[in-house]
Length: 301
Length: 245
Image 1 (cartoon, each protein chain N blue to C red):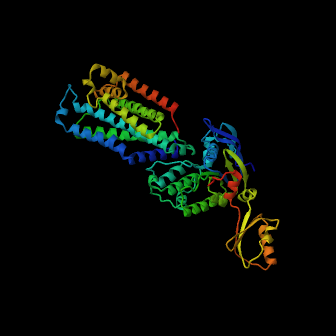
Image 2: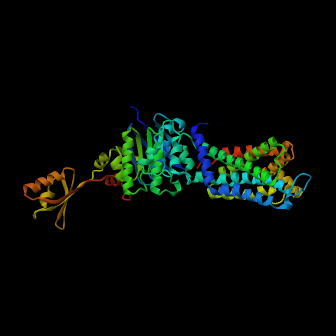
């Protein structure tokens, strides 16, 4: 099956500032594809080119086999878009906005169902909505045309934790219906929870494309094992293990760092010496750690 | 025209009505002035053989209504849409932003049409002002004047950078244009130079065409041509240089 979205060597500059240097990726049918990067990395410019809102300086883009710039009508019918800063007239009511937008598409979704799923109230005026409610409405508007592909930019920015989880569930439900989703985000937790594959973008370039688990293992971040031994013992027993890179004491706790097999090796040594590990905790590398490691800077969110 | 376009026009009309400013300044205000002027006996004595001062003011107030809608309501709404990303959001739909502009134009046109009928009815039924003796000529004059004004409003929208600038420039243009329509000094009482200038302004030309229609003639060519030129030139520049972002 041909890819749903194919971006090759995209380059876009504003005056003398390069926003997107060289970005290539493909998105497959039915997946949730994440575009992850810090603010200013070029994520939004990239998807704006894919949406046909901006004209690339170089490179080619194909969405559902269509050219985003020349096949506008067909593309806009099949591509749902949530913009980071897309607004509606302040006096427009939520129900009116959804009804209006659903009239734009040949096979619209049931807008009342979306209204209900996103917990919006029909009569509220756009200007009176909270930031989170405006965000949810903009998600609803992206989905109201029953798109084959949806591009969601900063999906849950401004939502409280409960609303964020509800939105994630909604997105998983949309994907279950076969919609291909591109998710632009700087939330690691969101990317980890929702995305099948992630393109990590930094300074206008794709650093790597991989699954969330693949990204963390790529970063080769050590795991950290912490426990309270049932009796005193010589920690040198652990330090000599090839899987272990470091051992330290913190109060009555022992902290061991090492590779993926370190936990098994440590447990074997403790068992041989009839030591039990109390309050055992294993910290694995998170996507956030991987992000910092792979983009090589410390100021990531 | 399909379902989406009609719905867009209906929504824009609703939003214009919810925006009280357009109705208060564009409809209620001139209507109140109409009633006040109609209630002053001295203004209803003939100044020429068959016209009173009040008779002259009815078309002035009709133009006042169109000018407020076209010069202030339209540009500030559309420039606001651009500023707030409404037009940008529309670009990602199959309908596109051009139809939002069209829907705003149609909505303001319809409001102006209803207001014009209302003003004529109040003036006629309330104060016995005769309707224009050449209804077709009046209709043509009104259509062309409205087209010229909406076109100027669109030009303001097209070129200004922000909503605040749209409102300021629209208002700034409104006053001199109304002056040349004879809002403060009837055109007939202006010095000859100002009368000549007035004839070339959209509202002065509109008044000239209205006068002809009121007196029973089809408007003469020159005011109609001036209105058409304003409409076409401004619309062409607006379309060519419209700022979408």
